[in-house]
Amino acid sequence: MSIRSGGKAVIAGIGQTEFSKNSGRSELQLCCEAIKLSLDDAGLVPADIDGLTTFTIDNNEDVDIVRSMGIKNLRFSSRSPHGGGGSIGTIAHAMAAVESGLANVVVCYRAMNERSEARFGIAHMEPNSNSTGSGSGFLEWSMPYGAMTPAAWTGVQAQRYMDRYGLTNADFAPISVQLRSNASTNPLAWYFEKPITIDDHQNSRWIVDPVFRLLDCCQESDGGVAILVTTEERAKDLRQIPVRIDHATQSVPFETETVTNFYHSDLTVFDSGVHSGAELFGRTGLTPADIQVGMLYDHFTIAVFWHLESMGFCKPGEASDFIKDGHLALDGSIPLSPNGGLIGEAYIHGMNLATEAVRQIRGTASNQVDNVEHALLAAGMSGAILGRC
Amino acid sequence: MSNEEFRMERPQPLPSRNSAFYWEGAERGEFLGQRCGDCKTFRHPPRPMCPKCQSVHQEIIPLSGRGVVYSYMFPVHPQMPMFEYPLCCVLVDLDEGIRIFSNLYECDRADVKIGIPVEVFFEKTKGDKAVPVFRPAKEASK
Ligand SMILES: [Zn+2]
Image (tube, rainbow over all chains, first blue to last red; front, side, top):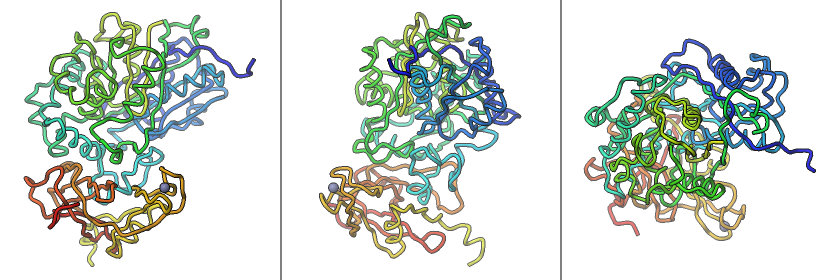
């Protein structure tokens, strides 16, 4: 028998701070508060944590969390790549650590003052924590040409897709309207009680002409999120009914880059989504028809189109019609981010999509979808399918 | 040069050890590419090993400077004092089969389209460096 063996990984706790535009406290404090809330949710204490994992562009170091929270000793610590596209990679790492027996209670975290401190939406010209270790060539290959924001880098990929399928920016409006509608009935959302119309979307100013208007972009937010992963065995005597991790994966296809994804042969195809989708559905034996909630990374509206097509919810080029047919509504065939997503709820770099997926499976969400057996977390270069135990 | 003029210049590239040849060539007004010394496959961005045959032998050779627009966009917000707007950013598929990110000049907004043939020229940056940029080609690309 191996000296390393765990048990089946589950999510036993979630925590999140309020989401705001100015938290009024340090990123480390947001981080510790979110982790503490995930422990309270699970019914555990800091000494129970023996693993931590986050992803690039998080300023919170494990040693500072350990000493702030009174964690006794970590046996596992990791930081996965790819920024928000890799956000769900934290769940893959936690799952791997728990199931191999490297650790028993691993917390995935992400905390940031992304609105009140280092904003993503400003021009990036110098190497800094926003540009290191994420597999993006933007500083070298885009910056000297005046493309300095995620909207610009994503916009040039989106334009090729729009041209191929004859779409205009107006075709993106239904995504923003749906997500803001969802957020309007979610008290945790920054845009609670603030829905928008198609006209609002079309009257918002250009960020990248002719691709993205302001209301195609996710928010910039302050806040912290934590997801607590342990074994099914350990979770038995904890506070919550655990949520199963059916599978979680990362994806780095040939010639795919983080954000500045310019180089693979056909940019109308979302390569990382194709691969992560094939891995998730292939391993679990599930199909898109088995998914009741789609938490699809929406840093920009186009990303929802890309996820729908690459992961098999519709065929290439059909996303626009699929969306207009109402499939993403709360009562549709694949409800999109009922919390309002990164556009409507907050942008905690993708991790607030994971807390909502857990709530949807527990049956405790504000905009609760009926009978959720499986939720899909899709962020391109990482993804997971969560299920009800 | 006054501080004011200096501040308004295009930012200079930040080369890596693997890409230094590209930017050093641009500084001399040469548009250089990297291809495998064995199987002759071009690659961009530059890298130390051929992804097709794993050879580390590389050749740095002049590129045709000709290609077609693969995609484009105009960044509107935020705007930088060192660029003139409207600013057209493009992905160009070069005749050699590689794709690069750049700017397109000397082209009316309405004429910027996917598939139009373009040719290279150079624009100066801060620090007396230069970067390859594009304009509509006088003759059609191959
Ligand atoms: Zn070769």
